[in-house]
Length: 289
Ligand code: DGL
Image (tube, rainbow, N blue to C red; front, side, top):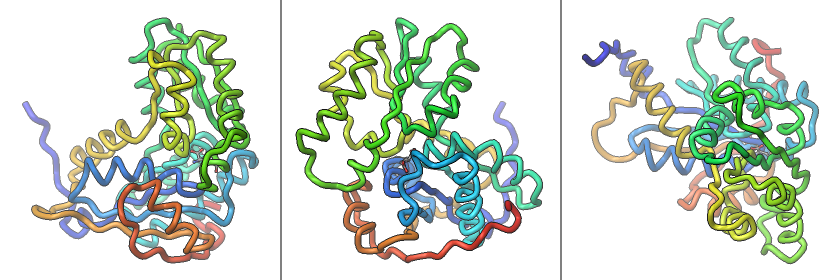
């Protein structure tokens, strides 16, 4: 029997879903959300002025994420997607705790758990590689998430300090870029992993290069598709799906840095037109400070 779902008011259901990242990497997640949830509205925030997050302290990232969450709540987000592995790893538990202390009832979904679930389901030999930024690797968030699903698999993490910046710069990939991707893959090849988690939302953009270096039988796992299914599930079980019956929803963009640069590189990440981008100045978080 289908569980009975009480719908929120049409006003609450019509609110947008908030999505954020340090820059444009989260657009690879937004892309999946737009494809799988065409009736929903979205507002995306890229904290481009403070990119990259990958080598910052976890406390600093928790503060940045809190400021962004407040901005997205001001814009009436009904659900929040942390489309950044660094922010998820450093701040998700803190944000969840603080969110529970408010009466807003808005939930947050991060990118680590969906990837851990997929990776454990995909591996045959129990050896999973992880490519991620230094702060994500240091947090050990993937060890915890993978271990919670199956404590018998082994995770082989590789911290990649420059990869997200090379990708976000959006220039043609030269030999230097290929060399740093190859160097990141070497320990994973040596460890004979059969599954690799792309632990940064920028990395799906270089999937072809990674697949070629790692070999065609290695399964690459990213968060976008699984997270979109999780969002769909969360909305329908909480009676929060957009009541729109026809046509597609709206999506809009905020960034903290240069608008022109965001629009240019963002179009490539999203693989759809970007439209208007608004520059936003983030205020120090109050409720989450
Ligand atoms: N896209 C971000 C992530 O998923 C990281 C890039 C960065 O800001 O260093 O971790």
